[in-house]
Amino acid sequence: MAVVLDAGSGFVPLSYDLLREGGIEEVVVLFTHYHHDHTQGLFLSPLIFMKNMGLRLVGPLQNGVDPKQMLEDLMRPPYFPVHHREVDSHIVCKGLEFPKTWLGLFHPQGGGRLMEVDAYEKLLLKGRFLPIGKGQYPVSECLVVTMRIANHPEQTITYRFEERPTKKTFVLLTDHENQSGLPLDVQKHLQNADVIFMDAQYNDATYQKRTSGFGHGTPRYCVRVAKQVGAKRLGLTHHDPNAKDTDVDAILAEARTEPGSEDLDVFLCADYQEIDV
Ligand SMILES: [Zn+2]
Ligand SMILES: [Zn+2]
Image (cartoon, rainbow, N blue to C red; front, side, top):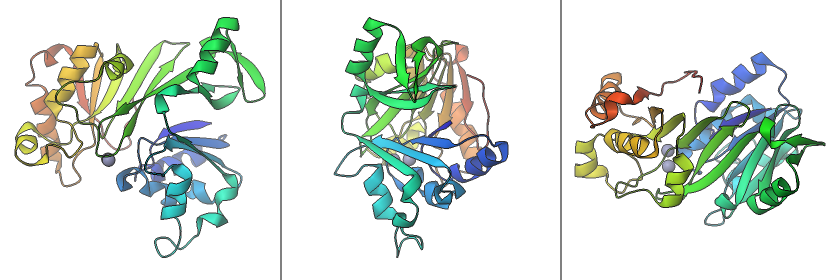
């Protein structure tokens, strides 16, 4: 099983990589939201046409749209030549009206499942084994994924991944703007992360002049947040589609002007990049 965050253009080469590697029978896509830059790769991926590949789509439910509705809206003529009805036999969708009441549990042998936080906590009180797939597995062997809502024109889910055996933690906080301060529950969600990927689309000058309210962050804001929550590493992402390499380099340079950035490992996220958390 592979767990993927969003299905933008990078989902297409990733899909081919997964097929080349082999041994994967199910791909879980956790959507932050359904803006086009986060969904278009889904329809261009070979995975969606492979009946023997399980595809599980999870995302927020908002304005009546969940992953199933997104599929129905976007995958049909005249927007796309193949109708979703022709492929949906191997696709399972789940919309989350209140994302923070859910968590994802993934186990190397058991596979994955979503569970309500209340039910999870009750099971933990009884013992440390959780039903995942056809078996029972200890949470200490799981990847545990929790969710919070982040601020964007649409509500965006930020996902936190905790790999319990190694205690390594990764958070994706993209399509996010909150210059006036993070809500407490999101602060907690980011606390002590080993790696955070954050939205740093605009430099301060552009943000002040033109893009405040667009739902994206700035590099210095990202550094402030990473410092506040005690993160070890910060990956700047959601680069502006019009940015040249030099513009993106300037985003990193601007991040490094924020006081306190000296003792934070700040880097630019790049296509096809692999990092160890
Ligand atoms: Zn967006
Ligand atoms: Zn976006």
